[in-house]
Image (cartoon, rainbow, N blue to C red):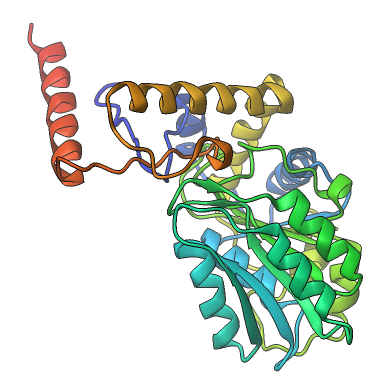
Length: 330
């Protein structure tokens, strides 16, 4: 494609040409038979991606909207939750919980460091009255490039027996192995602009049976983000509100491409790219923001020490523009 922009940021990520072309087609009616067939196919592909047999719901919202929906549908005012906070988005989920009047306890780690699963174990084991209703964890922290040990943290939540595990997978879904059913995760929220390979604008919430049980008695206010509405309409291959039609068409194309590659190949590709990127950064003498044992396959963060980050971006952008101009010179 002419003048293709090389995105090298946490998100949005580059979009394949075929996805862009399909997104540019004339929109169909969001209540039409044709579109319902697309939603039905997309829903099955989303279950494949999440490695689940449970509901995966589509929202016209950002990743933040998806995570907020994943939180507010399963709690009541004053419920106690435990939130992992080691970056911008862990901090955001604390803010969301506070905004809805939940009692928030935190497991914290410095930016660039992973959350300690042992701290979760200690807090959960100390909760002998089972007052914790949920544990909220960011799998891959976008702001730092840290991959938290979700599997171990979730095992401690499982041992607690009462709390739900709610996962921010906005960066990780589609880049890192995240088997919802195998690990017994209750809620997974994600956004379209990263591993899904489409632009920003769609959010996804996967919901397991324990979360739906909690939904029955949850009292937090909700309307547009009421996942019960989405579940009811999803069963009919529809959505409760006007969908982003062309984005869902693009999603269908992207998921079809992902199925053709296969989950294991996708995860291995991201792992190889992470290792190559980290090796290249080290060879340049630049410091990485995270240690090798907790680096995320979805994003690698670098800490410039002798130059300003904006200078680096400016030089690379100008070099790209120059190369495009040179291509056009006859």
